[in-house]
Amino acid sequence: MQILSVSSLKGGVGKTSVTMGLASAALHSGLSTLVIDLDPHADATTGLSVSRGAGTEAGQLLRDARKAKIADHVVPSGWMDLVPEDQRGPHGRLDVVVGSALSATFDRPDIRPKDMRRLKTLLTGLSGYDVVLIDCPPSLSGLTRIAWSAANQVLLVAEPSLFSVAGTERTMRAIRMFSNEFAPQLKSAGVIVNRARADSTEHEYRLLEMENLYQDALMLPVLEENPIWQQIQGAAYPVHQWPGDQVLDMAKSFDELLKQLVPELKK
Image (cartoon, rainbow, N blue to C red; front, side, top):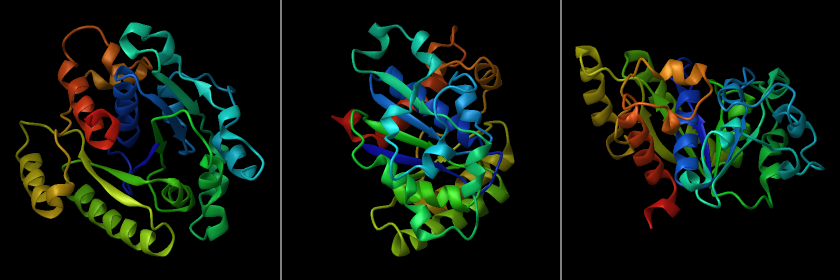
């Protein structure tokens, strides 16, 4: 089971959008996928078409980590009603651990090591999923550390801008330090560049800068800015099911990125 923490220490780069795009690709590929929404804003929960009040939310599960069984509290994404079985295969499914503001209880900069292990405890013994995607808040406070303690890999999301490039460098250093001290299993999966514009000289310059800085860690293809993406998210819809040809390239990009992240798809 591949456990991926989707992270960024800078807000506004589309971290939750990337999580949703990968979840759509996973469902389309016939994978059994769990999305854990650790962001107190719970945008992933909304975007995955889960009704408010459904399931036991992540903050409560973290509180009850020693006695709760996470599999008993997941809820199916509303996307399951939008994707015919012949397009997701007999084993393809998408479940969600819902988010809410209660998770913010754990988003402290001084979180204790035993609290950092709460999600890892919850995931111990979990089976039946090919991939787990953890959507983190844009910070290095308690919730992100909880996610990193449980994950196999951290997937970083950046955009081609000065502040995002600098923030991603800091995050890569933070992952190495955190791995050395708390989570030896943790590796960096790579950097996905989101919201790139082909007509922007600044974006072109920053992409070249990222290639030099991150080298093999920079994942391709780059996700280009698409004005329809906001409409898709507003409709709480999987990108692979959106009608028309305007998002075909975006859907294919998420497919290619997912293949690099999930070993089962490389076979």
